[in-house]
Amino acid sequence: MSAAETVRDGSVHDGLVKDRSVHDGSVRDGPVRERTPARRAAAAWHADPYVRALHAGRGPLFLRRTDGWMLPLDVERWCADADAADRTVLRRCQGPALDIGCGPGRLVAALALRGRPCLGIDVSQAAVARTVRAGGPALCRSVFEPLPGEGRWGTALLIDGNIGIGGDPQALLARVAQLIAPEGLLLVEAATVDVDERVRVRVDDGRGDVGTAFPWARVGVPALLHHARAVGWNPVEQWTARDRSFVSLRRTPPPPRSATER
Image 1: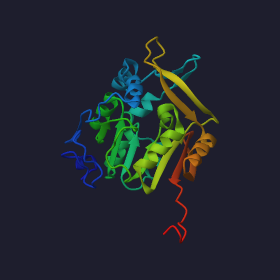
Image 2: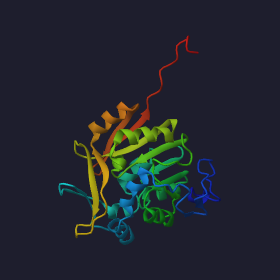
Image 3: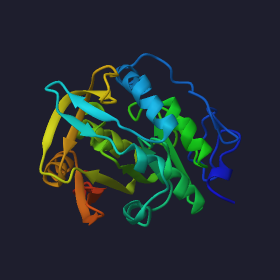
Image 4: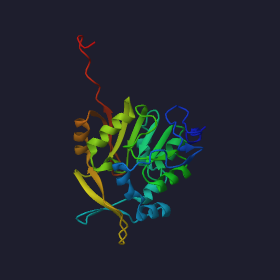
């Protein structure tokens, strides 16, 4: 039985997912609908340029800064099957895996095919629907909203630049620490250049159609390690694959209690 097939009646069989917004492999928007800051920021990923690109399975699509500089988004790779670089990430997953910002779901689908319990979350309903069609369980949810299985995920993924979610890497890393198990693993893709920036961007198709502005961040490996250590993560491994840079992290164990504290 695949991991995708274990999603039934709102639960994953390992007990992590018990959310009624997941039922028989379908996805609805879930019970968390309040207009939180996370929801307001998420509105940009419902903008027509992004939705149209996902439906087409291709770009062009960019994140456009206020100064006009544009970061190309690799929509074609996101909508394809997991590639060799992705598989270096998948091989390192331990236990149930949570893909944060799963997009169209290639990693969740690949994990489900391997029989690993998994869940993708994304603020875009179009992305979530595509993930489910690809065979992966997913919820339309922000990482900053309540999530199934908090504190019990074996692995969390922040791939394809998703360390930028929310525009504050330290806040995101602190939130992920609440989601994974004490010995859990965080796998992060960093920018291939030495950068540490927090900006406001818009989704832009390069042809004049743009979404609303939202906060984003880009960090290279040195900046990622700095932010990770600041909120209690330790680096485990660094590697590159197909010109992409990855880091694995674990939480810093708390210091042993003294005899007077016991």
